[in-house]
Image (tube, rainbow over all chains, first blue to last red; front, side):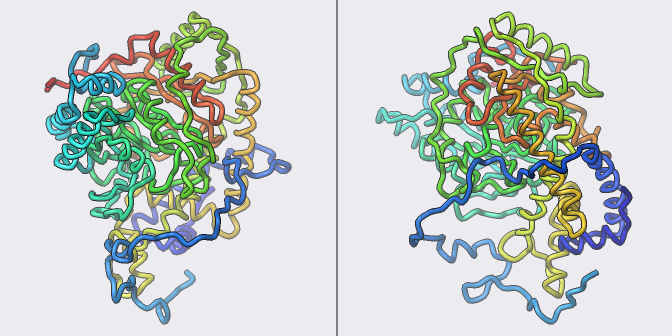
Length: 101
Length: 494
């Protein structure tokens, strides 16, 4: 399983993860090697095996729909890098160069 | 580094011993806390177990504990000095997860386990070191420097919970809490010669544990004895409505089940728990331990866990996939590092690119790849199916035995730097601990001797929600051996 640099860049873009050129090359080599080990799973025939997402023997954990207290706004915002009028502040999400790389 | 047998020093007491002395007023919580804070001050410049300490606050908690003891109202952990892995959010101090991206982050709330310990007036002595976001097997991935193994300062303490493990092994804390996603409690406990318990998935609330692999993560204790591990498990376990995966059952009664009797207990040995690269010293120590279990009256039975060798590759799809989703929240908007990039997208990419270290980036990439369009079925769903097989292996084995015994790790603590260049070699350190996380069952590592002067860990695995039997067996083994009373000779004995 050999990844290409284009695949590395595509995955990094999906993850919104900035990687330097050197990191991209290292990632290509290391991920290819790790995926090589992971491909051992293809030795197993799992056609009729159901998947397990969680081992917790719980389904649909409900609670009553009651009003509960939440954290005060100033505590929620106390670590915010930027805030404005009691809200988190970010640059405008529209009009940017949202590329599909 | 040579081992020394237990002394009367306050920093080598077990929590159960300290409880008795505290309640008889032969020792105060302030004295006990001062002894551990002095240990941190003298040893941490070389060991680096802690990222943050707050001695004034620790002593204030100790004074509150002494008042409570004075009123005759002490609980099991009142006045006991405890270190918290720095992935457990705690008000009043920073919680970093070992990452630059959370440097200086102060949580607005306490993790459920922190609240429960606080309710008993336990004393927090510090926030301890961890591989970044608990991703690693050596604590070398921490942005706050490596923690050194108290038995040999050139060796790793294991990981990811290397800080809390080394802190208990070095007498900097009497107990500590870590988290275990693929072995991050049991493996460092083995490397540091102490007890480390991963409870059943769902036994302990994960609220306030910074999430890594949500279907695998579980909080658990490090301790100097199995009895101490049981004591703190009783304090932190039990249903929490704010963690919907926490099991709706009360905290178990475990301490009263620690009988020390192994007669008739069925203990399974699996041939699959032997791999290439297993150190002879580890093999010998574990084989000797199995013989001693037999001598104590246990019935040793062969069991088969045929899919064991697929656990590691399954884990390295499942855990990174869950991590890549969990770590999406670190985006420079709500908390943590934020690097202005000119546009929102550039800000995300710069912040995450500069805030995360190499191993975290590797796992985000691996997980994102496994979940991406075109690869989801081949990797993520495939891993979920193999997870079913791994769980079925344990279900079948536990039809015949009460617990399973195995090595905790194939090797003793390895040299600092030895595995950094080959990620998969590092991952192999967890080959014997990962299956329990995949199946959700509890596991505990207890010391079983030494190889090349370094501790060897013996792992017991139990049935889901049967920590009582698991710890009873581990306790019986522990008390039949001298190892749990051995401490590293660190100099600076106070």
